[in-house]
Amino acid sequence: MVGGMCDYGIARPGGRFRGSYARAMFSDLPIPVIVAPMAGGPSTPELVAAAANAGAFGFLAGGMLTPEKLVDQIGRTRRLTDGPFGVNLFVPRERVARDMSDYRDRMRSEGQRYGAEPGCAVWDDDNYPAKLDAVVASRIPVVSFTFQMPSATDIARVKKAGSSVVITVATPEEGCQAAALGADAICVQGCDAGGHRGTFTDTGADAAGGELYGVLAALRSLHAELDIPVIAAGGVVNGADVAAVLAAGAVAAQMGSAFLRATESGTSPVYRDALARAGRGTRFTRAFTGRPARGLVNRFISEHSAHAPVAYPQLHHMTKPIRAAATEAGDPEAMSLWAGRTYQLAEEKPAAEIIESLAKQARDALDVARDRL
Ligand SMILES: Cc1cc2nc3c(=O)[nH]c(=O)nc-3n(C[C@H](O)[C@H](O)[C@H](O)COP(=O)(O)O)c2cc1C
Image 1: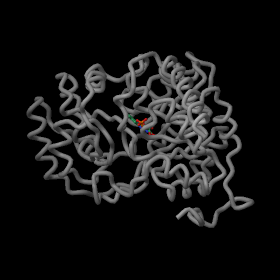
Image 2 (image 1 turned 90 degrees about the vertical axis):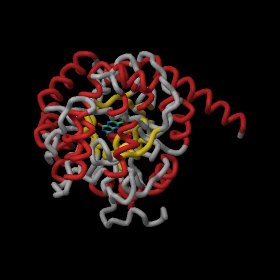
Image 3 (image 1 turned 180 degrees about the vertical axis):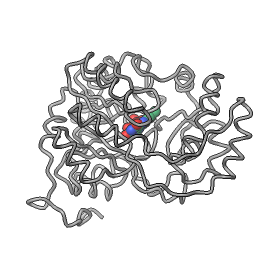
């Protein structure tokens, strides 16, 4: 599978793809840990600044924020740290017409539990153009894109502003496409990851929306093909996992669930509580947003997943008032509680302490592996 996988006809000199600036930026990180962008509340300027100040790297989550709020968060982060940080954006898909009437009926009855009406199932572009303008104007060191590939023009604009471009992918083939388009680095997201899958295609064939790769399989395949840095995400929760992905060729590990309960994260109290009570599994669902995402299994997921159409962001807007009402009522059973498969191993601590423990655990794990070899 690996040989020739990246034959997209756009190879750079030597047939390999280059990304020296992003390589330097991530290889020079004192601690090769990236605090993932987590839209919907968990990402905060405080969390991103804490990561930068602890020698790691953090992304603000631009998805679902207004352009004004994103600019405000960038300013707040800059006041809290002198270190570099990144901003992540959702790249919109084309508008696709869908019949959502059956799902709306389901959501009407679901909403009655919480005294909420389903929202208007509109398509929108998440204010992507205005947020892209904002990151270009703000000259953010690293801009990462998810959900779709940005256009070559957008990539060129971001690079011209001096930023490195990271594109999130879920399969090696998508990684090759992103590299061919000009990404400076790839973030490969394995199927254990919490939150939305960063895949470009959603086949709708199953709840995961397409072919699944574990992080190591995707990472190794890409590492063999590309000469740009690859960041590994998905199920990485302990320093031993960080050591594993570094040994497999990643420039850094991107971690979301490990920081969901960090003191500085904006995770709501009900969400934190659900994460702290071990015992719930996680699964992919399209039920909340119309796009596959991994979250803690709750009643909403169990009852509605099988009926949810492929319709992002329309379902996100339709279910939003219901999720908000459930949060208000303190009921985790109708909230989107995104979490990766290993979320139970994450702890409630200041981000700097989590990062320090990860570095120590990684060194210890490598010592054990070296002795073993
Ligand atoms: C609550 C939550 C929100 C997320 N939001 C985003 C996002 O806005 N943009 C993005 O690229 N990835 C997002 N992700 C995915 C992360 O970038 C990362 O791939 C994932 O957290 C890695 O898996 P882990 O949770 O097992 O560490 C989110 C993940 C979680 C848990």
